[in-house]
Image (cartoon, rainbow over all chains, first blue to last red; front, side):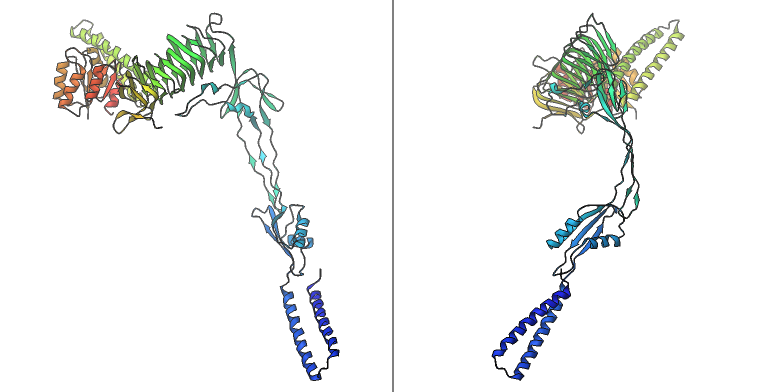
Length: 511
Length: 116
């Protein structure tokens, strides 16, 4: 590449040649000498002006150069390359190295792109902007040991259906079964950290990341770098731990061959549970057929594929949710939600959550107490059996108050008898007076108890009773302590408590 | 201020039980097992709550309810019944009773209606 000076000289020489050539032509002309010198002077002035112009132009020519930008965290160096214009000096590796040296960038990893960029800049005469050319060493985080549970096992559904959705119960599979020896989780060992370094050579310390670790629970064993199930069972996980709950599997029915069942883990029954048998479990119960008139108590969930037939003797106490096709003549208490597909007939249901049925579901007769309300297709029937629905109430508190009431009535009865006897001035007056005082104390004690728990009775004033189909006369509704008697047919209604008016109102379901 | 309640129920046991129990809550209870006597007392004295058994001889709870509300329109009347769908219960509710106490009822509901 020519320098500016060379460029100027070449141009000048070229102009001079032109002029000299033009002078040669003058041999054919007779020119007055004075005129000649005048012409010569003019041409000289012209040349000088031209030369000045050329020199001026050469000042506008630029050399190629480079700008470096360093990121705030000192971990990246970006270069912008400016090409040389009009014969200016081209960008070179030396130029880049000088710029890097001037900025005191002594560390970092050089990317292999700089030579290509320089060529691109010079040959194409284009500015190359903000290209990363040097990277600092990023510190590597140190990670504590942690356990990674197989994500396939995390697909257990937490069974709950939003308010107005139609449930397809067939899709529900709340149990995740695992086999003995199945790997459930991977153990990730400690990952050591490493210091980083900025482009200026400054060391950057690494972070120590503590990953929250789930604690493996019962029936989990270590094998190589994983955790496996020690037995067949149900995989259970929460935010603190995971474990395998042993399963008791009964291939047939629960009857005289099996006897009553008392088991700490989950129970799976492939057949039916016959009339009169008792089942107690510390886990969940899954019955693939029908549950007949039995006493069942579970700490967790109950799923009965067919239905539950109580024959007036069936009593079920469920610690979790309960799901079944139908319920007949049974008393059921559940801490969790109660899901019934087709019908609830002449039964006593108590739940701390909600009773949820399909849109074709019906509740006929009996009493249903659900703290968070009821969702159903039909309430009552044309035959008009009394159907009672209570919303907003904590049934546990209510049962305690009922117990207190019964005790009070008994005590009052005794008190009345004693008062009657005392009026006749019986000889055992002193003993009877003492007994009367004790009874009064007993009544006071019961009432104090009632006073203490009474505040918890009305638990959910927002509870609603939603009926997507018909509500028939004969239905009696209570929400908290307010009453509503259905004395004519209604359809597509929601019963709720109007706190301002202090009564229950029936509103059409909003479409 | 002490709350005042009147209960009219032909079953003396119920009247006594309610009186005894509500005494613990510092609630004054006047109880009558004769409906006519009870009605006279109800319209002569002010009460915070009127508890009327539905099915009684000579005079039923719905009739008493209507007579009370004629004299004291703002009276808070509760009907005691084991059968909420009883036509008389519906009649009483339509006449202006504020609620039902379904037998066997809890004292807690009486407390709730008294706003305590």
